[in-house]
Image 1 (cartoon, rainbow, N blue to C red):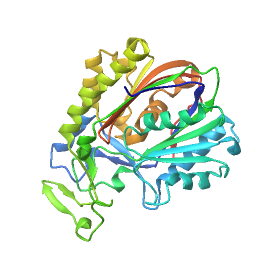
Image 2 (image 1 turned 90 degrees about the vertical axis):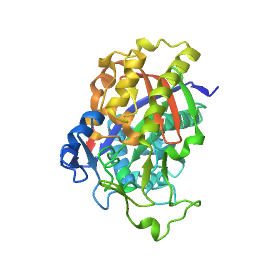
Image 3 (image 1 turned 45 degrees about the vertical axis):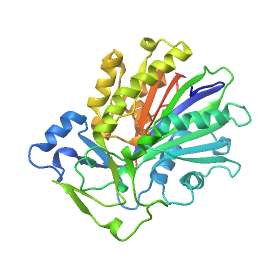
Length: 351
């Protein structure tokens, strides 16, 4: 069974950053009259933030990192490890985490890793970088997550453009022998890898002239070969089946009382899906925060963006016991049970 418990590591702070430009779904040209209202009602997404040309993921991550380090009072040389989970690299090579290290002015004596992952990225990245710190030889780390989804999805696709928003997060972790354990459960269904896929740009299908041309797939849906494709109904069914199961397996394995959490943090796929999951688990409505109304689906950053925008007063002012669950690309799913204690959680940064 794919369970992991990590000792001696605490979350010290969480920050997030989004660009200033806002796109309102009600005004999108990809919709026919009356369609926007229906999509907004179903997804719960009214608007999202989008980067302007010339702004990259490393820029947002660097700004979020600067704010969090200042609020924590951490010297940059004290950060010994960084991890980035994203599907929106600045370049195909090198890994973007090295660019963030440079822009943020971190020490050259630094462990650095990139994880090529979308929506499950925060939970998966947390398990990776916390595992590194748990040995005690390194004391402080930063986990960056984020995506710029519409840089690799079609702006002329009414199934995609209303959903995704740009943004990033940074989570500060610290070695602490008094920290309560983090407990994880993981799973994947690799046979359904093509439920969320970009077919061109890798070694199976290199970029060609044809892959850069738009092709019509129906009313107000145009995509290129290099754009992402999502089998929406397959992903929906996968989410509402797998999320309750992974949370129950996590709680059964570690003898956790699912009903005693302060917060349940779900990947912000869409409001209808998360509500289905909440009701299936009989979780109180007031303990499930939503950020998608104003930020959309921000992929690997959606859970920390939800913490920062919806719950920062609670996370910064008291002890909290939480469960987070992320799901998507892979198809994969992962959940984590964790504690926080008066963490640094500033309001969202606009940059």
